[in-house]
Length: 282
Image (cartoon, rainbow, N blue to C red; front, side, top):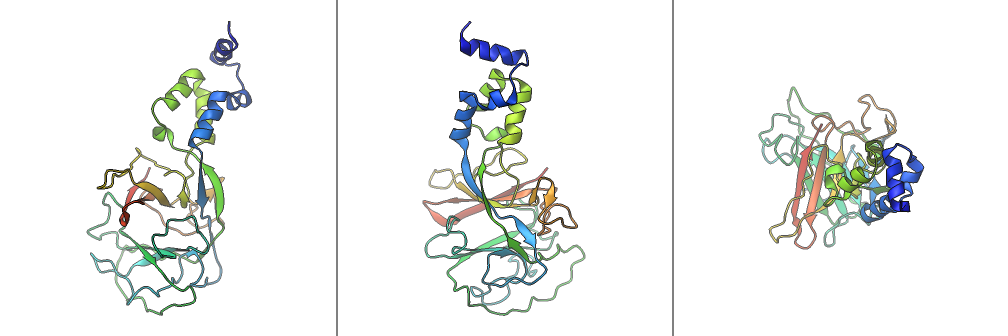
């Protein structure tokens, strides 16, 4: 019997250890083929207000790019500020042209006519600006009355971490994962997926951590759009939020459906006008 055949007969008898499994050429090849760098934003609740010239979740944003307080274009509710990222802090993020500031807002109205579409649970608004971080405007948020308004996002500073990211089960190409399952035991293939899968955090780069079937939109030019950002309900590490928060899921407090994510895509050839989002949840 050849060494190759003996190796895989051992696994059928349950004799291969996890260490031996992860050191096989097939598994090493899969890891090298699919590994991508992702930046986890890792929001941490802040006791103090964070400056508008910092990258952050929640609090007060840099309003320099606006003429008035931004409101939902459908239900007219004043938006909740979610996130801003400066190019000075995250040069690897997608910034088109001369933009140096990315901002994300969210409609607080669960009953907005545009809520719970294919794109998002609550309607989302993204903006790119070329802004001097030291500039700002002051706007008073318009008063509104909603019985089921989503809470504002508290000030959260970021502790970004670069990590290796891998696709979810359905995102593997062709028979790559099928062969893994056939060559090795079901327990070992499950061990692979536990260790090498998409990270469920707010992040940019890497892979979407789909909770349902994968979705990659096609641009009108015919190219598949690139995934570039994910807003997640579940910014936790080893089951603990950063730091533990009342909702037990994330310091920013946003719950997307039932512990879901909103994914952002762009065709980098055609530009920022092609940006679209998609969401799913458990």
